[in-house]
Length: 314
Image 1 (cartoon, rainbow, N blue to C red):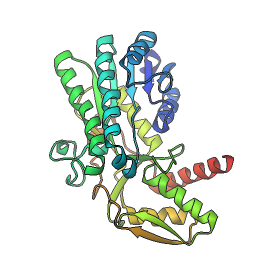
Image 2 (image 1 turned 60 degrees about the vertical axis):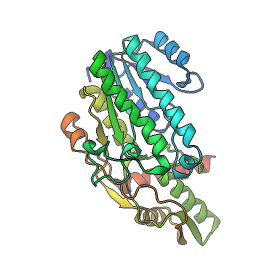
Image 3 (image 1 turned 180 degrees about the horizontal axis):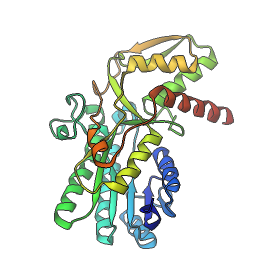
Image 4 (image 1 turned 180 degrees about the vertical axis):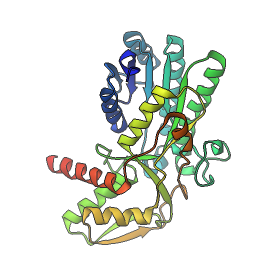
């Protein structure tokens, strides 16, 4: 706890899903000087906005969460946007932060950076042994360049930055916009709306065979804070829950928890995405003591409850 009162922390993307939970975790830890760098006040694709923020705030620690994100559909429709925005939000930020004398950066990558056919569970050593799954490769590779930059700047300049690789996140305040949402919020929205409309079925992309690992967002925020406190190296570190579930079983579970009684109609003409995703999380536990605490069904119940409440208010 003595670490945080001494820091001037910038959280990029602090208004977003993960950012809001990281801010809560920082306040619990006693961080007294927190600045949010996010649109519209700070456009991280504009280097002058980055320089102005660094001059005005003079941060000692930057947690870089800002990203252009979305599900398979959004990645397929906007590969150039996902590549350019994520690259240009990250690379100039690291460079200008080093020039400004920032003491430490925590950079978030993505599980999409792993090769399409990575042996399960994914180990950090496998990160460069193949090309990412095609539908989200531009996004994954843009984020992966921050690892290259982190290691290069540590080697040449001694700049202290760390690189974390979280699995897909879920939880309260997730993005339920169907054009941008990931699989869990998309399925919750489908099931709840179909239930309330009395529909007899919902359509689901793919054939349900792909597997995924999901990390509850508050657990992710805890892992990010622990890395900021205790980890000082540029070797990549996975953040995950050690729980793998097929998309088919996930849909059945969400349908049960939302009380949707209709049929599930699979559309095999739509992509499954990467065949399997499950991380080896031993490095995070060894290096900074992180282990996910939230049981998957408990996290889903909280996410569904939040969405139901927000929907009624809207």
